[in-house]
Length: 336
Ligand code: NAD
Ligand code: WQD
Image (cartoon, rainbow, N blue to C red; front, side, top):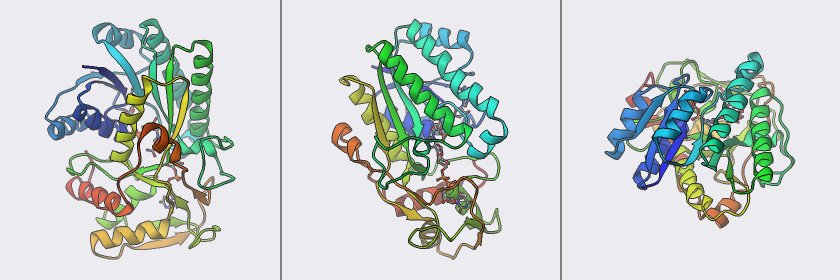
């Protein structure tokens, strides 16, 4: 049985990916320092799958701990989710972002090399496309970033490219996620923001359930279908199976590969609010405010490369995403 190390496996995308891997028959080892998650997500994974995983609580910057993990476990490949991800916060505390995301990944890569484990799938982001010149965005579009968080992702993509060029026995895949939303269909697992959410979807569900008074729609003067921002929302379980497909492809991969994980479809803020209102069965209040600094008008993926090369395509539509997010929100109004 192949054993996969999942860094950040207690978090939103990592925990859903653990489910997909366990269900596909992989052994799973998780390292997480719980800075943005709870151990409860592991219990939910085990309840959903009926399988157990091995958990190490700790930081990927703790070299000794990582060495112990690689000594104890026969790790075949790493899926690397661990990191900080809030754009606004990254502007406030850039050093923490570079330290955690960049230094943490360097430590991880050094220990992997030390133990001759040279297969890694890295969580990148559509944020590396900056304000895209074309939509849908292909993988070879121009890259640019405007905030420290995005810069950590672009730096890490470049570091991984340099590593691959120095030693082509590495097998490296960069996955650029678009906007992950939704939750596992069981309603036992979902996104669990610790404070007031920054992202749109958890904000909408918290308004829908009455925890926040209204949605703040950031700008209605963009050059889009209704003036509000357009994004490529993707179900978190589709992302999870995207990782599985990438993992299975890694073995035969001849070079470093980059894949967009998106649906290829763009929805506006108002369309998402409308869809969620239909799912919850009542209107959800919103107010149009000023644009949020740093936001772009439109961003959606050209997802054909993943389909052609990984045989992966998003299966869930926007209504499924809203329905599953809402089920999770109702079951766990305060998150884990
Ligand atoms: P998350 O915060 O829910 O999960 C990240 C996990 O990593 C958390 O459990 C956290 O406790 C852990 N962690 C953070 N720093 C760590 C460290 N130094 N050592 C050990 N564990 C650590 O975030 P997520 O939404 O699941 O995102 C996972 C990855 O995907 C991140 O790298 C993020 O940048 C990337 N990503 C996320 C999105 C998104 O919108 N959610 C979009 C694109 C890319
Ligand atoms: C979506 C749309 C907002 C909140 C961010 C990161 C990106 C990636 C995914 C990690 C935009 C509007 C939002 C609100 C609103 N993360 N909005 N009211 O900004 O596309 O991407 O998360 O890699 O790097 O930047 O996602 O959910 O914040 O915003 O009107 O309260 O909703 O203006 O048009 P975004 P989002």
